[in-house]
Image 1 (cartoon, rainbow, N blue to C red):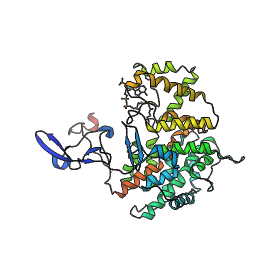
Image 2 (image 1 turned 60 degrees about the horizontal axis):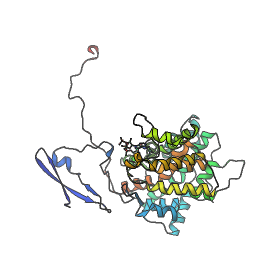
Image 3 (image 1 turned 135 degrees about the vertical axis):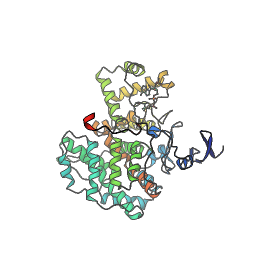
Image 4 (image 1 turned 30 degrees about the horizontal axis):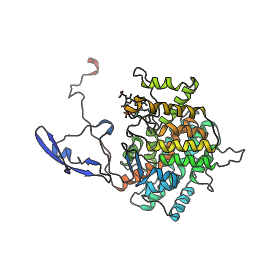
Length: 428
Ligand code: ACO
């Protein structure tokens, strides 16, 4: 194949280099398009065909159902590594040695305190505030207590900013939950690992000893690994574009939290559980809901089925399904909602409608059931996703700044009014 793409506009021909990625994907490099054509731009709402950057962090192939971080398959990472180890890999590019991991973990622990004045901000939120709104605001507010802008060309300053946000973010996330429930705000216990701390900060109450359940921690750890990065999705692109203006890491991550909040992005796991619960309360007639999902006159869709990128299977869904089964077996749990989910999946996978459209369970189909089994309330599901995605946001922000990428500034095609004469107020 030629490494040149040819474009003809009004009889004039232009050539652009074709760049190949590691896995042989191709991209047409149109950096010079406006200059050579005298102002033409490409139009691609939603950026479905537009690469905004080159990246060394995550590879995914939606057709083949592949997801890898820094070249390692997620199937292997979820089995053999823990969340923080994978975070190190995603952020710094290599699996940590024992010494590197110990230092990383200790440095995060050393930064797990949050300025007590942040509690005044929490007190200002109405009780009805959604935890994602609180988390976004609190992450942004961190900037006020760490006013120095990170010098991205200093390895040490970058590292310090990274361990700081990794230390404080789960504390703030747990505070969003505790405030909602009227519970005292907890801090981390530095004798525990990162994911155990998330559990104890969310659930420990002052009157009782909190016992860590290693099976629950393992399930959450696996789930969080699967969420660590997913290349240029909506929230990650947001983090990169906000950071491209040289806004700091906390401000960029805060914007990422807001982007993740939407039901079309991180909010889908909540929608799945609400759907399963509604089916249960309606008598559990799975076949009727499958028929509703297939009926073009019915707006109902099977939440947790289908994916914009994965068109054969979502590799994360396979891992999560197994994790969900293991968790329920190990803890000897029963949940009628899980039975409905399995029945729904079984019926849908045999149905021609879903097979023809390549609709398979996605990552959200089982993740909500795991969260529910762990006692995490529905409104916190997207917050858990944000905790999982934090290393990805950090890595992408770091890569963007280190690559000295230019400020993100898409173009537009103006289709509004041409120059008009102003009509004075009295004459309108
Ligand atoms: N239930 C029933 N039918 C569906 C579903 C579904 N969940 N998803 C797609 N279809 C049908 C569509 O009606 C369409 O049918 P048609 O060709 O007869 O018109 C066909 O499948 C293609 O659907 P599109 O919406 O064009 O597929 P797209 O790739 O654009 O959408 C999406 C993907 C948005 C995820 C969609 O499958 C969906 O809405 N799923 C349910 C919501 C969900 O689970 N979202 C979470 C995604 S994972 C994540 O964000 C982390």
